[in-house]
Image (cartoon, rainbow, N blue to C red; front, top):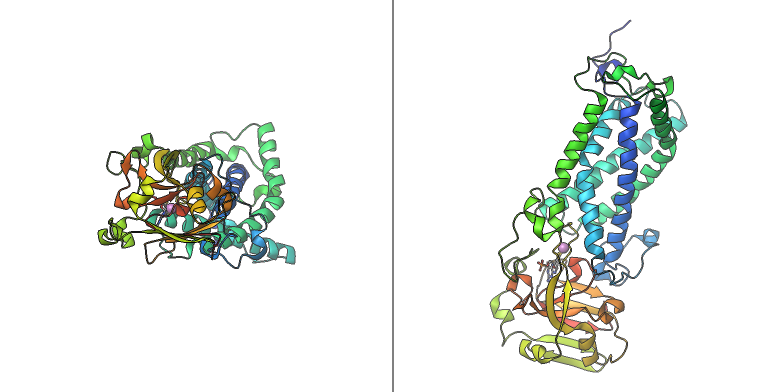
Length: 425
Ligand SMILES: Nc1nc2c(c(=O)[nH]1)N[C@H]1C(S)=C(S)[C@@H](COP(=O)(O)O)O[C@H]1N2
Ligand SMILES: [Mo]
C-alpha cells in the first residue's frame, strides 16, 4: 500500500488516537448549548442600544430585516444589561478552549479529498467553512474588543453583528445535520460502555469512523482525560474573567482589562471606561463659570449652571454601570435631577418624550446618545451630580452624567452639555 501519510490530505497523516466520534460529539453538544446562549445574549445586547430609536445609537444602519426582533429596551430589572452582558462575555471567554478542541478534533476533515463528492457534499463543506471561519471571527472580534478596547474604531459593532448572523446561519445548518448523529454516537457509546482508558476500546461504526485515525499513535492520555484538560482550561478562563462583574471579586479577574483592584478607593473608586483626559475634557470647560446645561424642548431652551441644577429636587437611585465589554460595577448611589423633571422644565409636564443627549466631548462615537421615552420617564433615571455622597470626579462625568436603569454603559453619557427633548436626530 502506498504510504501517503506525509500529506494532510491523507487520513494516515492524522495520528492522534483521541480523535473520534465520542470526543467530537461531547464538545459539539457543549458548543450547541453554549453558542446558542451566546447568540441570544448577543441579540439582546444589540437591542439594548435601542438602535431603531436614533441613527446615533445605530452602528449598523443597513441591518434591514435583521432588526426584525428589536423591542423597546425596558428599565426593569435594573441589572438586566449587567446580567446579559456578563453572561455573554464570560461565557464567550470560557468556551474558547472548547471551541479550539472541537476544531482540532475535526481538522482532518478540512483536508479531505476530493473537495466535493457531490453537490450536497459541496454545500455541506461550504457551510462548514462558514461555520469554522464564522466561529473564529466572532470569538476573535469579541476578545479583541474586550481586551484591546476597540481596536476596530467604529467597526466592531457591524463586524460582530453581521459576522454573528453569517455564523449562526451556518451553525443552524450544521446542527440540523449533525445533532442526530452526535446524540446517536453518545447513546451508543453509553450502551456499549463508556470509552475506556485506552481510546481504541470504543470502535465506532463506519459512518462515524471518518474522524478516527487509521494509524493512531499510542495513547498518552485517555479521551476522558483530554476532556478534563479542556474543561480545566475553560474553568481557569472562567475563574479569571467572571470577577470583572463583581466588586468583591474584581481582583480575581486577571484576564479582564477592567479586572484587578478597584481603581482608587472611596466613593468614586469604581471602573472608568474613558477618562476625562482621553475625552479631551478640560477643567476650563467644566468649571462653575464656563459650564451650562442646555435643555431644549417645545417651550424653549433653559440654561442651568451646576449650582442651579443642585437646587432642583434631587433624587437618589442605586444603579450599576454595565459595559458592553462585560465588566460591571455593583450598584452605586447616584444623586441628581430626574430626567423627567428636566423634560418638565421645557414643556413636557406629563408624558416625557425621547431625548437626545450630547456631551462636551468633541470626538468619539460615545459622545452622544438617544434615550427612549420609557427610559426618560423612569423615576430612577437621573442626570447625576453626585455618586456615593461625593460630587462626580472628572473621570466619572463631572459636572453631570446620565444614569439609566438597565441600560448599557454607553447610554450613560458623561460630561453632559445638552439635552434635547422630543428629538433624537
Ligand atoms: N461622553 C462620554 N460618555 C460616556 C463614554 C464616553 O466615551 N464618552 N463612555 C461610555 C461607556 S462605553 C461606559 S461603559 C460608561 C462608563 O462609565 P464610567 O467611566 O463612569 O465607569 O460611560 C459611558 N459614557
Ligand atoms: Mo462601555
